[in-house]
Image (cartoon, rainbow, N blue to C red; front, side):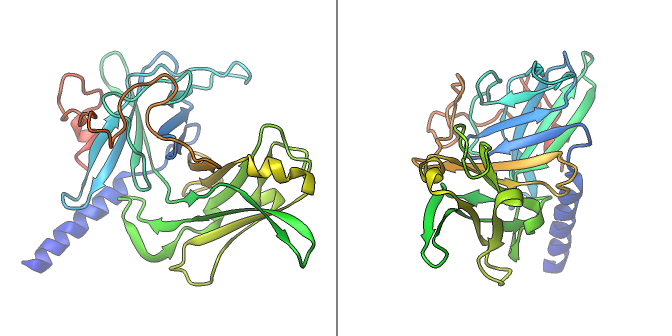
Length: 298
């Protein structure tokens, strides 16, 4: 009986893993866990999109809905050619979460669905929120080299991308990670507003042990940039399963003083850990914008 149960559980996990694939070429989903925000690109004009956050329940071996957005009409960026099809949630000029603002975490599935006027599904994209966290940038002085370095520390333990469950003794490949320090005032070091590990610094795990998921990003900087670094914003990015495709990204942000999650950009749905927050409606409720078999039957 135990063996049979294990087989059933394994089958459920495998099914869930197969069900999730990155968005197709031309579409992109960016998840911002520290801000509890999502930005999609490449979605059709004049068709409302609904963004959902789902979380894996290990006991039930299935994903359950945490929150959904209100229907959002994709928007254009006037500064770029063509229609951008931007779908933003919990950001200025974007839509809002309904009932509850999800506390987005590593392993959460984020889905964007568009349907036509008849209710037929035209787009059903999803990504798994990447497992990467980071601290605010700091400056250290290397007395041996007699120079300043901007430094960011973080971690990236590996997760199963179908279910979001931890993978013991493993970490995210460095090829799927990038770290930036951003300051709108710019840096004298490189003449740009961002220091990027792939161009201006290094990104290494702190030890050779694959179970040690701690990493350090380091950038040599000029002394004149010390204040800009310390006032800067860390962006630690999981670049997706295929970084070259650019269709899924998780951007974990931090700065001195921290970044507050919960409702923002004029939105008001209470944070997930707020006692006033309401549980997402059961599948099949009149206000359900996505069929149950697309969200819960995985």
